[in-house]
Amino acid sequence: METKSIMIVGVGGQGSLLASKLLGRVLMNEGYDVKVSEVHGMSQRGGSVVTYVRFGDKVYSPIIEEGEADFVISFEKLEGARWAHCLKKGGKLIVNTQQIDPMPVITGAAAYPENILDELTSKGLDIDAIDALSLAEEAGSSKAVNVVLMGRLAKYFHIDYAKWEKALEESVKPKFIDLNKKALSLGYNC
Image 1 (spheres, helix red, strand yellow):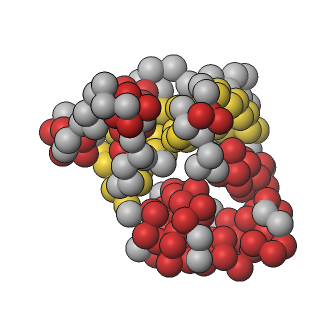
Image 2 (cartoon, one colour):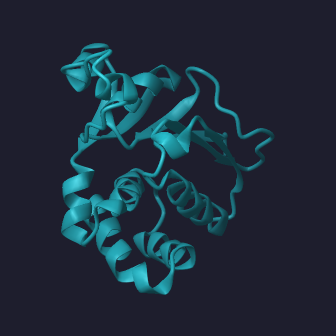
């Protein structure tokens, strides 16, 4: 199997590391060679966070270059726009429709760009936009946006859904399993 590349992008504190852990576990359980690399940029202050996940028969590097990503999973609209150039032709951008203002917007030095998703669509990108925040809240916690997005990603894989649930059980504390299973299901079924 040729190597596939997935980027998980968001803002610090959104749970991208759990998302990459869950995804990596699912893929390793399927027998793939998996490489994960995390890049933090002021993540503890709400800065951009990027995680690379590559998998296939044999993967030599976790790094994803511009135009190589099969999927970009974005936890926030502006981050989706920031990393859309990494998608390969025919790749898919799964984006949470949530808006999180970066520091220049908070301080008034800049304005949050309007119509981000429309602009990306007009450039020919294949976008799957999802209100992951509302679904996470429906599951029981706004912090479950990451798992909602992994549920959405699961729709595009030929991996039995029960295996995603099993990997989730192996990735979260027991007291959070039911909430996260609901979040995974809502992302998958919406």
